[in-house]
Length: 244
Ligand SMILES: NC(=O)c1ccc[n+]([C@@H]2O[C@H](COP(=O)([O-])OP(=O)(O)OC[C@H]3O[C@@H](n4cnc5c(N)ncnc54)[C@H](OP(=O)(O)O)[C@@H]3O)[C@@H](O)[C@H]2O)c1
Image (cartoon, rainbow, N blue to C red; front, side):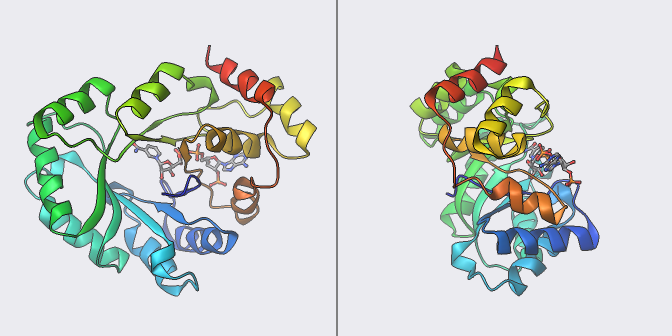
């Protein structure tokens, strides 16, 4: 799974289609969408038109938990709109408020075993909820996608996911961050990059998947241009410190 991905929440219409095209051209190889975003068809169109082969693109979409009982129909629709015959990752978008956490997880396991998605995971789950899935089914989610950023940094949470073999994927890296924070601007100036690039790079050096969203072509390019500099241990620790 690539550590750098591209988010598409609140991207609609032609700007969503263009943003995904620009992101693929700029080198992003993970695209994150969801049934609830209402843009899977636009994401699918950009993927189909791209020169990047399907097998080089990691496609994630998400099941709204209210669709429990209609999982099969939901993934069939997602695959049709995305224009592919298999997802790379299908997530339960958030824990179901009604019905059983474990029963829904068992349905995802069945659908994964039938081949419509390579892997399955969850989003917005606590470690305790993940533990109940593991205890009841013996199968850990491949990924937990949760709100993350320097101000939400929590070493125990990172360790907890690692110990359970669950990839931590962060969302809303910028919305959870004050990009004008003096620590971020100091580090950004030292490397001649933007605070947003520092935030993306910080995730990657922690081994946390990051999926920045933008519909602005210049930002799409710079946000993903994070492989030409490296944060020092001191800089990483200073950014971790924003979480305290
Ligand atoms: N699983 C979940 O429950 C969940 C929840 C939320 C998000 N997500 C996923 O995570 C992705 C990312 O999270 P997000 O969309 O909430 O927020 P985000 O990526 O933290 O921030 C997106 C916002 O930041 C702006 N932005 C982008 N680059 C910038 C830059 N360099 N400088 C200043 N502003 C910049 C964007 O504006 P423009 O677009 O106008 O450039 C947009 O308003 C989503 O798109 C979605 O795929 C998942």
